[in-house]
Length: 428
Image 1 (tube, rainbow, N blue to C red):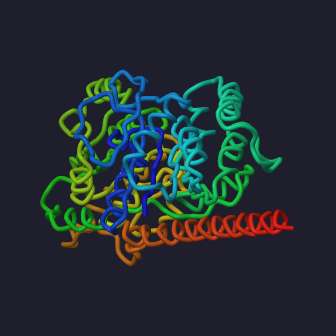
Image 2: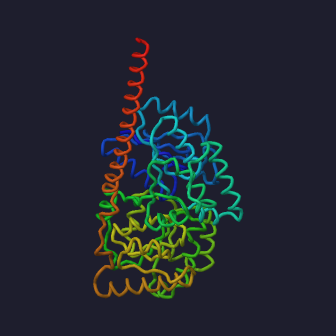
């Protein structure tokens, strides 16, 4: 089976969706299939990948982390040329919402291949978080989609703004996937119909390796960890400010270990200095996925600080699989993951996060005083493993391929019947 995965950003760039794409590619390869990832070229050094197709792109962030490829005939021709050197594509799996999605649907149409579309992003909340002109952006997105893909199939009248764009985009997909139940409900409420729930998986082998390399923390300083892109919607500045304001964390000499980078990195460094906590905060920058998992495994608790933005809890799934407790700021994610011990903020303010950090540190201190580590227990960690989720995805792919083959055979039979009737008429 050849699965073509098309996405907005290079799979080696920073982000949970990118990590999940790499994991899916690796799991499909291990199962004996070919998984080709199509994405904009990355504008920074990275190791070449044999099964990637890097598209011409323009840099859209100063650090070169993210790029954009312009959909159209040029990209169509380039992709068809590259794909002509590979086995035929059986399924196109779109894992993007913007240019990657448009490129994916166009190539699927040219290849006559079915589309599976995983919606990783809350386009409505994400766009509103970065621009006051969100309404105009949504109108432009719909116009762009129509220009490149033509008229959409009918969609729900509930779909408005960003949701209408997503509804029109996914109307051509055979399967639509949401990485979480809470985002699937949100999609349905806003008129994007039919999404099934399939969480992003965590890498079986990496989880096992990270667990094996995690040393006991009972005599070490209490370690809280934050991972992600340093951007406003991830609330990294709020996390630093709450940690600084936590009297319990200060009294325990707890440390905050931050992994990732982004546009707010300079601001984060400045706030750490202003708050006088540089001796208790460690900034590691962008790290490899195995290193990030080891950091989570070594931590006493993970801070999940975004609110109403995430469509899934990638680092939270990983923490739960590794047994690391979580401080949640997003109740929807907390309810869905449903692990113990955990702490959920009462609201979205920094003061609410301070109280949750105080409670977490107090619980960790108490467990250490009792001679034990505070770890997640009584949870089905298997539900997040990539191997199990890849099996489910393969069943979906095979069903689509089977249906496609049946349609082709039916079409060929109908064509043959027509030719036979025409020949009989000619003989008469």
